[in-house]
Length: 178
Image 1 (spheres, helix red, strand yellow):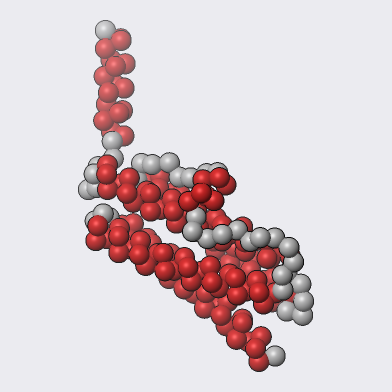
Image 2 (cartoon, rainbow, N blue to C red; image 1 turned 90 degrees about the vertical axis):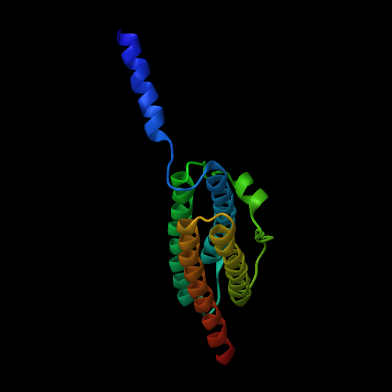
C-alpha cells in the first residue's frame, strides 16, 4: 500500500511539473534556442565591456571607467534575466564560455592595447549588432513561434541596448569636439 502511494505522489509531481503556458514543446524549444543565442552575445559583450573598464587609460579615464561600469552592471542583469527566461520555458541556459563562444555572433577582442576611443567604437558596433539581431528575434518569436512573452521580453532588451549604444555614441561625439 505504501509503495502505491509513493508512486501516485511521484506521478502527480511529474504531472504538475509539466509546462502548460500555451506554447508546445517545439515552440518553447525554438524560443529557448533564440534566447541562448542572445545569452551568448550578451556574455561576449559583457566580458568585452569589463575588459575595457579595467584597461582603459587616457584623459577621459574616469568618465569612461564609470560609463563602462554602469553598462557592464546593466549587461550582468540582462544576462540573468535572459537565462531565467530560458529556464522558465523549461530548457537549460548555456553556462560555459565554450557554449557562448560557439553560439555568439560577436567576437572576442583580440587582446593587446587599444585606445579608449577605439574601445568605445568597438562597443558601439557590438551593441548595434546585438540590436539588429534582436530586431530579427523579436519578429521571429512573435510571427513564427507565436511566443509573445519572449517577443516582448526581447523588445525590452533591445530598447536597453539602444540606450547603451546611444550613450556610447554620445561619448564619441563629445570626444570629437574636445
